[in-house]
Length: 296
Image (tube, rainbow, N blue to C red; front, top):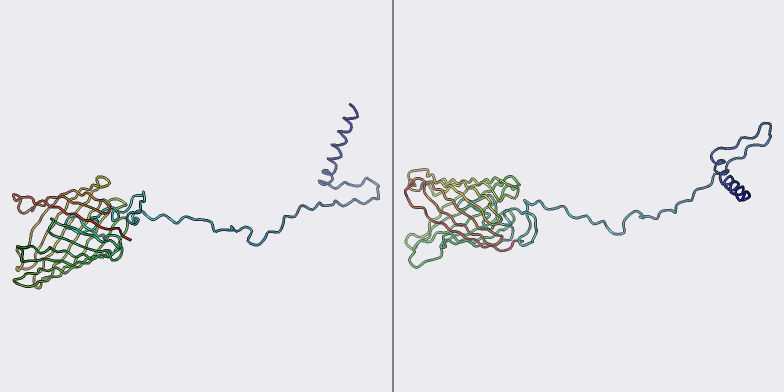
């Protein structure tokens, strides 16, 4: 037993001696002529040389593209779950009732609208900021007058807080008795967004009808308040101000509350319009519907 203990102590001592020698060089004894032995450094294992491009991935690291801001939206029918800008979710995005908004349909969208059933409208979004619209009435058996309007709207600014657009049009009346009369119309509209997708907004617009010496200025303002995903409340006020005695009869002030049922491809507006300068007059019902195709 004592021999085993002695061997264990010698074994430990033999293992510790090189460690102590590596930590400090032993000093020669006093009077000894023996020079101190130099400590031998043990080379550390050398790491294998790295090959060229070793740290580079064999395939490019996938980096997902930055998300599209919700106010810019996504193509119609994309199925995205994020809240999208109202121009992708509301087929009546380009107007309130009569007052236009400062928005257009997505690029490549065809749309068909009906105002009061008899007034028809067809349009196409040439780009994501410009659309062309043709409005008119189909020829009826007892009607000798056929109105029409060709308009162009362009969005000048589009941000999450506001939108600005300008428009111009050529309006006319064609009749069998007097031929065709054409007038021009130019205007602009500013739309202030009440939420970041602009589903609730306030629009204020003005246009000028140029009919030779007669000028009529039309002003309008409207509010769209989103009540649910597919239902919005509408309120619009319109005013016509003639400039010159030749068109004094073309004046008035009206207000129209309503409700909108809207989706990506179909929207229906129901409202009542009432003239404020004739408070005792009747309120006229108003209905409009729009169907549009999928944009690019």
